[in-house]
Length: 84
Image (cartoon, helix red, strand yellow):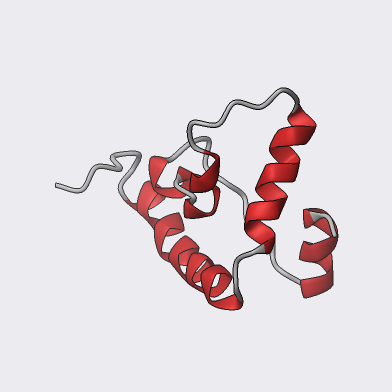
């Protein structure tokens, strides 16, 4: 199932996203890809899907909960995303 279909099926709200914010860029679901060289975009997609398919419900629930908290950091700090 592709991501857009999943978003529609689960009736998730799609948020607008700031241009770039390190607080939102971190994704532990893709750590298994770190340091790996791929020969094609399709190989990257397959490796990412295989890694994410093995995650349980708790992984995704925790990620969504963190996303809500992190999504506030960048705009509320006016781009100053390093905690002092």
